[in-house]
Amino acid sequence: MKQEKGKRKKKKYRVHKDDITVIDADIAKKAVVATALGNAMEWFDFGIYSYLVVIIGQVFYSGVSDSAQLVFSFGTFAVAFLVRPIGGMFFGMLGDRLGRKKILAVTLIIMSIATLSIGLIPSYATLGITAPILLLCARLVQGFSAGGEYAGAMTFIAESTPDNRRGFMASGLEVGTLVGYIAGAGLVTLLTFILGSDKMLDWGWRVPFLIAAPIGIIGLYLRNHLEESPAFAAMEEKKEEEAEKKPHVSLKELFLYHRRSLLMCLVLVFFYNVIDYTVLTYMPSHLTAVLGYGETKGLLFIVIVMFIMIPIVLAIGYFGDRIGNKRIIQVSLIGIILLSIPSFLLIGSGNNWLVFLGLLILGAFLAAIKATMTSQLPSLFFTEVRYGGLAFTYNISASLFGGTAPLLIAWLINLTANQLVPAFYLILASLIGIVVVTLFLKNTSGKPLRGSPPAVTEDHDIKQVVEDLDEELWWGEEKQKIDKKIEETNTEK
Image (tube, rainbow, N blue to C red; front, side, top):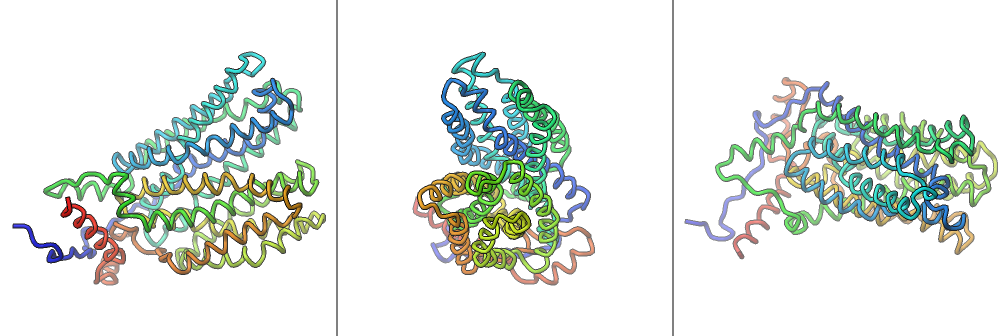
């Protein structure tokens, strides 16, 4: 006989010795390398397209004026952002059903083929209007794949690393981001220097895209030799042991029962992407078009700053495990609020050293946020919805606020003639971020992921973990509320 509504005894989510996951350190490192390589490839493509945008316009849109070529070329670049949320939803839901490893292999294959195909498409002079249509199709496929790639990589690393080292190891994903972007920008600059403008326009621009094939093969090999993330494997094993196997969470249930996590993710990704795209994507054009610096000098400044950001990311990832990601995010946002205007005054000074110092200040705060987000964002969601929830909300927010940041800033500067507009936008995003982070974000550094038991690196750590967690797991009360809502909905049916 069914118990009356409200009488049902609440399930307690306690930690048991047999539930604790022991993670092999070597396997965890391999997971970081394999996922970071795929992420590096995504940003390698981002970098080469950004720095070849003028040539791509000349090759694929030669039937229109020079100014229109640039517009069409940037438009083809931006269109990939439109399909990223769709790709995130598609691959994310599949990843929560089939596993993280399989989907990450699929997204890497698709990304490699699409990037390679751009280097093989004949020019407008050869194919006519078919050429830009094929380019547009390739960019759409890239965007669709990228929608599942980055969120899946964050999810896989977070679930494959021990709790007390999750921040440091997950920061390796952002090292992949920076390395990929640096490699793309560096390769284009090197080829331009060696081949010259004419050969680059004739055939040299294709080389960076063709390199995607061997990179993709290496990445696929590494990913195919990974084990499934321990958190997902443990969840699936538990389902098999249950008498009645629960169905996978649907998209409707994700929005019904996990709204808080979705909203938190939207806000975190909002300020993260505004800062990221403003500093790394918009600034080269700001230095050139607004401040009158030569393209080579502006790119060189940004590339050097990104090199310096790599050790900062790793160091902050390490300290985040000890003092907490929340504190680091708060300090970083306060720093951006206080120092954005001084930084842009330095950047607009005309003195090379002061310009570099201004860029470095912004880059350091961005590096601190990058180092924390790769472990903080996956911790917002329970295991059964982590990939899907993160992929969908990340790409929605990135498309709305990240991809539009350079365009919005450029438009506002043109409208107001105020060179401090980027600083004002950074301050606005950071003010919203500091309020939400301070009031609503839980510090999860060193704690188990939502929906998962603790993860340790050594067997002897198990006893200490059990003693420290003699009460219910930190996410137990939140899970009880979700279970209650599900039960109430099922009762009404």
